[in-house]
Image 1: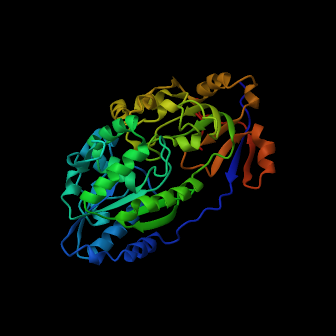
Image 2: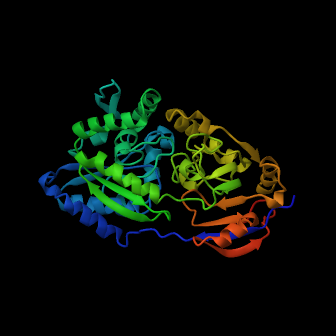
Length: 418
């Protein structure tokens, strides 16, 4: 088969970025005057989630240093629902993989799947909370604010969700995702978060917003009574700064890697235009992608292939390297079993392209619109087929940094590195 020529394209992104992350954390924490609430010898639980957040280790270390300066005794709690198969030691290794280690942070890590029920919502939904965090004098919530991959509302992923799914652990995640079927995500988030903030000694939130380049763009310390109000505003910024694929219509999207460190759904459904349907865009969604081919998993996902069900094609190596037990636990907990469905797996990239391009519509393969990205967090540079040449040359926000060339494959038929 004759494949289209591919060119390397760079997006010009004017994105805000924090020049000094450590200084920003210190300044934000100082605004809260925590000495009025946190006394010497008080214990403070600091939850760390399963997502790969830029500078997360430095942010957490700086927060811990500020807490210790008040005489407090902070400790880290791995805060994630079913990631890592719902196994405490695996969840501990996940946060350590992000650099959040006891040696670097200067605080112990207390990993457990044990929870306590701290109450119930007005609808009767039980509210669960990490046992170690429940025994602390205070809890300092750290979370990135961004659009959720499944749900839409004024509140999506962020501080409030961390009080549910993260600190609710596997037990809480199972209960809340079941509740989302009967009540809206927004309703459950608000009602559970109210209970947690009221009963679980939340002392502050540290909200992180990233830009289109996956850089730390904003850090804001938030009082617990302001979680709802501030997160609504921060989510608006996060949506503006979300990574984007530069072309609205794509015949075949090649994604080099997916994983839980990239997105809760492995590949961010907001970026690929599949938030509402697994295999096509909703009428008002962009981009409109006919087929998606996923090549591999990130190392940091520990075999969790959640989200692969949104792809149309994949590789046998991904299927063989995936931990399907962990994947099934994650997808069943989230009430999204389709996200664990296995697309057609091919022996190598050449075979996947030859077969995949036969299913994108009535056009010659060399004329198809193909885009290749590393992952859905990293879209600044993409490979795009020659079909986009005229559009790319006409746009001020794009530059061609490698003229159209033939696709290159190694000796076993796989695409050469990005």
